[in-house]
Length: 293
Image (tube, rainbow, N blue to C red):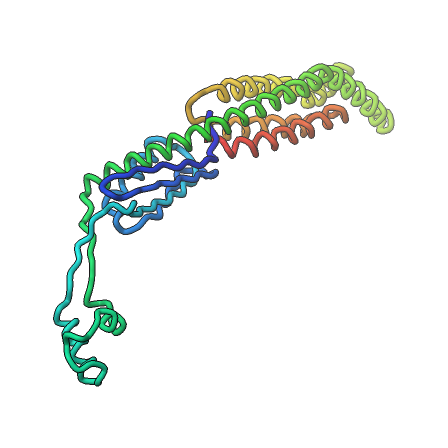
């Protein structure tokens, strides 16, 4: 189980060029990749995207690619002789110098340096592919390591919260039958009082049957059984090494549904308080689950 939050950086050097790739990920429902890179990387940017998609399943992925020279690349210089001669003629025509041979280079450069240009050799695409692949792979390894460590911390926290859920659920389970019995006795008393006030003639069998039906509506045994089953599934899922974020989302939704049903059916104040505690713990779990890939 991995977190969706992490950072990784990788570098590669070839042919006098250094390429670095930084990858940062945060929570997201899907795998959303945004790559910022210089134009020279455009022809091989798809390699970065493919490597990320094969490694990460969820998360907002921010990628920063930089390419710099390491000082060992050769450059080709070209001289625009026509422009250089035009500058010299202008300097003589304006009276700054009398003869062409006496004009220093500094004077020509002061007017314009465009007459001397240099261009870098085009980087072979195979070299770019190799550098980008190596740097991205290193960044993904560092990122994955961080996400694994973060996921382990989240896993421990969630397993601890599941223990709290079971403790509260056991408290509810221990008193649910007593609560149903108490509610049944309450209904018996109230309904007898109403019938006496109305002078109604109702058979005792029919009377007890109606009381039983009403009191059974407060029984939360089924919800407790289903909730406990979801806790077991959640615990097993947390120990899975595969991406489990979406499955955990679903289980949390189901657990919330069971808790809401318990709250609506419960007739005991103590059970209602315990239901509130279950909801609070489930919300904390839900927030943590948003960080899981």
